[in-house]
Length: 436
Ligand code: ADP
Image (cartoon, rainbow, N blue to C red; front, top):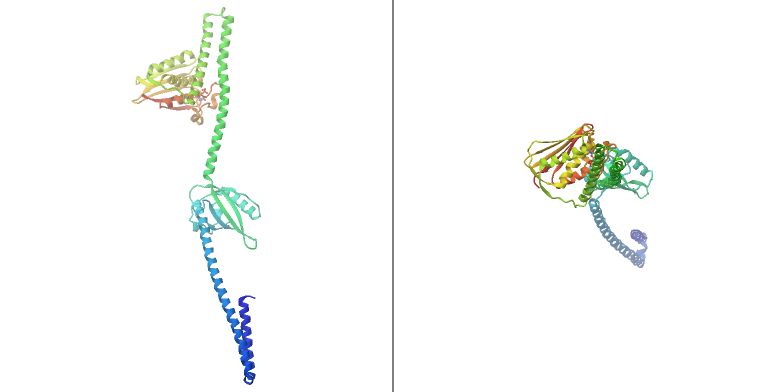
């Protein structure tokens, strides 16, 4: 029996005693002893009642104290929960079953660009990027149907600013009867993650591309070696077998073929070596004063002699240049590579024009041809090692020449630019400081 019940029962008993006393008043007058017995009984009952009442009061007090402590604990827990809710790095929100926001932490407010308080009552869908509306609906419908979904990614669209990708984790909220009442959402902005992923993928792709370019390079280098060597071998055999019958002119022709093939081999080996030296950071760099016109003229003459009458090479200078500090080997490599490309990628019968001029601080050299040109979208990649434009067809090459030119120009602290149009021609312009 509870305290309250026993107090009620005590009261009943006391009432019965009082009623008894009233009913037997007459008898008590005749028999006073009976009265004192009845009064004693009543006083016992009242005493018991007092005790029960005291106990009840005591319990009530204790219950009250317990209730106070409980309330305090609850308040503290609520504060802790609120602090946690607001300080976690991820967005956390609670929605009803239909996805209408009921609670949201500060992070969600920041992510969506809306004050935390104003989020309540808004459907979460309004912050989902248009392109993902359908996906969002599908997920929610499947979840409502009891599907177990792990984390999923979705694009959110804040009030202002750019949309962002987010990883969303959800869990269901049930009431005491086990009925679904809403969802808890954990939202993590994964923009940085996606960016890192994109960089990684790009790096992987360029790694792969570099690998492919390198194996292509090995193929081309072997081919590039074989062709001049075959010409040398064939010319030497012809000279050996038929030299005694051949005219001097013919013999001269064979000898020239051998010489130009050897020059081609030499240029190829120089390029490959230069490239690997520069890659290893071991490229020697010794700039010395050079007479610019003489320097350019010598290189142009050398190319003209090996070109014969297939191309006409011409040096144009306005007398504005005197001396510049240039590394002889690298300087020659720059001009050699630009000139051999100009003739290689131009049809026979066209001209190559080298122009030289200086301003107060720079020497500028341009090499212009009327050749196949370079597609504009590929021009920015020309200086990458092994890169060759798509329109080279069967014209031989390794894709190293311009990379070496760029390395040499960088060492001089200069610049190179290209202007080109397909089937019209190309102009490379280099600018080097006059003094190092
Ligand atoms: P390659 O050995 O292939 O000539 P380069 O590094 O010298 O290698 O040049 C890279 C690419 O740039 C060439 O494969 C070609 O596509 C393009 N190129 C360079 N110079 C010219 C030019 N004068 N005319 C047309 N295309 C050129």
